[in-house]
Image (cartoon, rainbow over all chains, first blue to last red; front, side):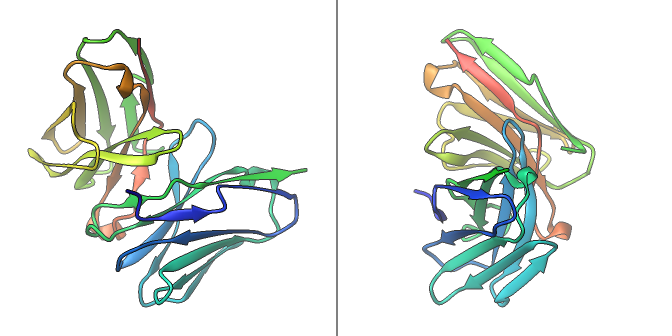
Length: 111
Length: 113
């Protein structure tokens, strides 16, 4: 079964709005990663947050981690059409070298 | 996709035939992975390698075998392809020096008829 569960499964917003995606997991982790996948392409690493971190920023991305709730969120601010993609969280509960991916959130940015 | 190539990119084969997919990296990363991606199932790990000739099973390894005779190459073999193995297959690499962030290849779309 999947360790990470993303919510919502699909999200459609207007360009310029913020997009928030959530990830919940079941067991203790050392770090959590977020990836993006454009249609027909491989996944691209976005950001990694360690279990002792609560928030991390990278450009227009903001990731939070709440280990007490076993959840993480990915916020994309001022969305652009190019942000249209699927977003996956991945956890390392089986060991740092093995990631377990959720099923993803499909984000659509409407012009 | 830089530094990771997969071949072939597309393949159509018949049930019962053997199929080998190749992943090649130029990054000298220690770990290599094979995933399959299917609608409704996300990305699932098939096998991974933690060094030359060192491999281990993932979540969905039945019907698949792998080999790694060189650091840069990781082969995935379907001994006798079945229609349930129709999928998109991704190779990925990672290294302890990069906090195990994974870098993905462009994918191989396999159709078993």
